[in-house]
Image (tube, rainbow, N blue to C red; front, side):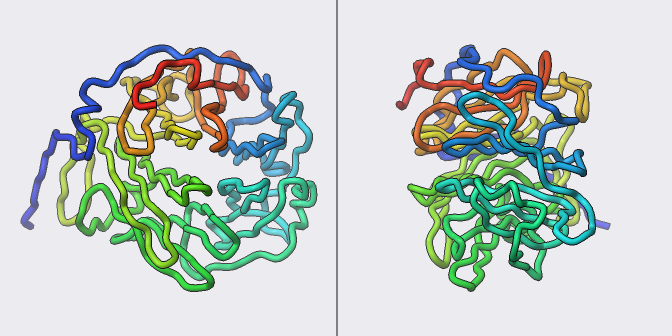
Length: 335
């Protein structure tokens, strides 16, 4: 059978020249917010005006922990994983707007909106909204205007506005890929004030920014910030042996898009600390990679609000902890 091979080692992005000369420096922890997190392995981290929300995907009796943002004290551990009434199968956390969040379940194809202050009752959360189609991530601007990541063959997202659905978005490769769901998954985050959506892929160093409308999303820019290596065989995308890692997590601050990137080679895999990233790639909202910052510890998970240039991560050493970083302490170009 005919096999078509493409090997490409080139960057395809709007701001390639800026990427080639980007500065790099160290970033120090400005504050350890909460030490010795009680978790087998931290999942999604979210931050509100008062709280940190930490998903614990391996804790079946309490998949959600809530911490005080100022003191780091754990306030609540709640949420059951199972198949019974009021239980969750594969829970996830959306973005936060005005202390409102959506808890969603990709396996059960359902979600609900709730105030963070009411999450103490998450084991009996109320009315679920159901979807017929698969979705894997969920972000929102309002209860009637939200985006789900579907990762189908032609479009990564479906946007819902006042009950109507609109397939939207595009992948880094402008063609139909049969294994898109395996190759193009990533993180999506929303800037509620600017009505922007950021899409950053796990397996490929690629970031894109969209403006969210009512029936479509407009691509503003995309940045393939490292050269990729791949082959396409029978419309199946395969990464080459030197394909770099993509973006592990993304957070939006007031002036920057912060991407957590593993940019070193390691034999470590899975939950081994040595396999986790130690760098953040900082983009401005024009799509320019303005700086690379090396973190003092291996880290996973990012969280931020859009009020300041502070972001948070889960540090993995010496013990799991939530730490604070302040981008205003570093001289960044393009600010």
